[in-house]
Length: 217
Image 1 (cartoon, rainbow, N blue to C red):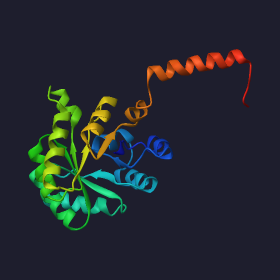
Image 2: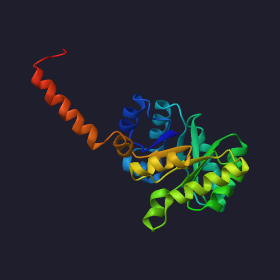
Image 3: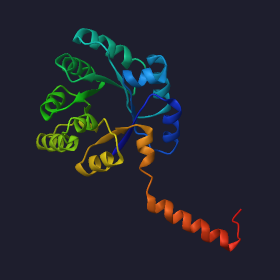
Image 4: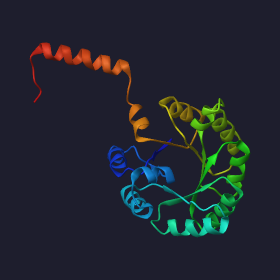
């Protein structure tokens, strides 16, 4: 399973990238706002930093304007994946850009039917939002499982990019179900290394080592 980092913070991306934990990056207007940076400038910097796809989102709502924005974003770097919402205008944009050979990430997916439409429109990635479904008392993992089954049934090549990841359990469950990619904030990815028994074991080892009076360096 590939790890995408859901942030526009350069330092956070660089730290994880140095550890080999970054297969791509996803951004959105909210993350750009949080970064306080110009979208074209920060996106170019991210693209130069990582080798994998970097999702940059259009903000127009009509297809003609979405396509124009998508083409402009695509010029930033070869590894741009233009991000479009799962609306009819977004699907039209996806079809146009994917036919031009551009990677497209169709976002804000909340149903299997929407995911089918995105795949038929040529999406490179479909982004089902797990956490937001959980917020309204639906199981986001059920959606991941349903999309996986349907895509496998018909050989759709669109990759399932599990998004709106809130917890480490979301990552585990996505991997178990067979999501191709997860995108998560840096803090969630770093928490994957945490376990209380690891902490307890290390504490014991260090206490015993101190009693030996030895040093390695």
